[in-house]
Amino acid sequence: MASFITFEGPEGSGKSTQIRLLAEALERSGSRVTSTREPGGTPIGNAVRAILLDRRHTEMSPRAETLLFNAARAQIVDQVIRPALQAGQIVLCDRYADSTLAYQGYGHGQSLDDLRRLGAYATGGLTPDLTIYLDIDVREGLRRKQAGAADEWNRMEEKTLAYHQAVRQGYLALAAAEAQRWLVIDAGRSIDAIHGEIMQRVQTTLLCLPPRPAPDHQP
Ligand code: ADP
Ligand code: TYD
Image (tube, rainbow, N blue to C red; front, side):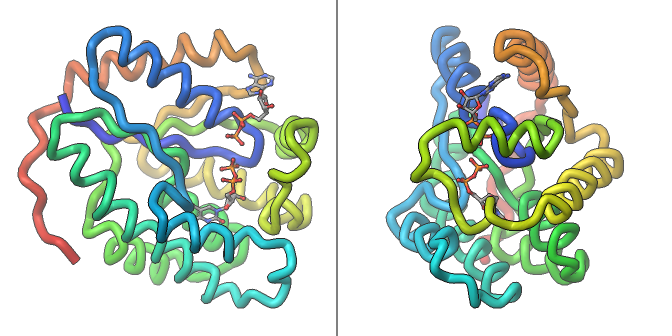
């Protein structure tokens, strides 16, 4: 059954690792899965991603940053996510609109109301059925990330520790405010333990989902 599952978390929390494991498990059980990520996931989104993450762009205005993330989001929703859901697939997305609330809202102090309105416009109102939040100590996540490929280190990750801590607190506040949609996971544990917890919740969510209605409005 079509369903839309997003993954959120601080840098290096293990989102890509867990998306890969979940996609493999769902495919083994016969589901059709589309895995994608933000910013990116489309040629236009990847071009916007290169602008956003370029370490030379130190002068980027916070509002320009927000609009670029949402431009990439509008494109991936229209070109990848909605068509896959309409074809009955399970869509797994590495980051989505909640990232903007956490990073540009709680991190940069932009108005959450403005960001919510902008997010609703960019997504055409498409919200996830389930959001899996991988919670990890910010230092540990950045350490994991830096231990990986050096060329992955980007402009967003260069921000201060205090910024990343504000992002993490923001995520926890968002999850507490909408507890039915969010699954909060302690991501400091082993890859297998985290995967097991995700599998349990995803199976329950898939069983309980009502049929997805036809898409409401396109922006
Ligand atoms: P993200 O997509 O959230 O940035 P990744 O899945 O790319 O995170 O993981 C970042 C790094 O941490 C990778 O090198 C990955 O192999 C490693 N990693 C992922 N999950 C765990 C875990 N539970 N314990 C230890 N290392 C992990
Ligand atoms: P990426 O290398 O994809 O990081 P990760 O593997 O942790 O997802 O870089 C994406 C960066 O962009 C990451 O630092 C989070 C940030 N970001 C925002 O600030 N706002 C957003 O709306 C999105 C989608 C990402």
